[in-house]
Every structure is written in C-alpha cells, then in structure tokens.
Length: 102
Image: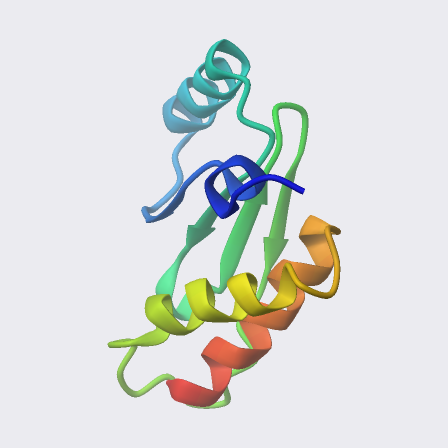
C-alpha cells in the first residue's frame, strides 16, 4: 500500500493559479508523485494527479474557524487508508470530517 506520503504526495494549503498547476504537474511527474491534496479553507479541497484536478467543495454550512481542519484531514486520510486505497473516496471522507470541525 505504501506510506501516506507516497499515496498522497503532499498535503498543503495554497490558492491555485495556472502557473502553479503547471509547476505541480511537472513536479509530480519528475518526482513520481501520484497525488497531491490541497486544502483550500472554505473552498474545500483539490486532489491533483499528473493529468487531472478534482475540486471537492466543503460541506460545512458556516465556516467559522479552520484551525485544526488540516489536522483532521490528515487523521481522516490516515484512518481511511486502512479501509480503501481510492484517493477520491479518501478525500471525500476527509472533507466530511473537516466540515465537522469548522
């Protein structure tokens, strides 16, 4: 199954712009990273592969404070890896969990 780092590549918070998308695609290919998960505060998350970007909107009704949401995402993905290897399922699960803490 590999480590969380190998499965997700990288977890970070960033706002997306076109040059960054190109940079991530090149970096992923160069370093053999299969997935990058970007947490985007009230905008939800983006799961990137070398060929696709999947935007997952937040499920929180009112975003009050995103402190701790990133930790929740990491914990939910680590827990979810014991159940599935499907990146989109993991992201959907982590997104739901993060929506509870904000």
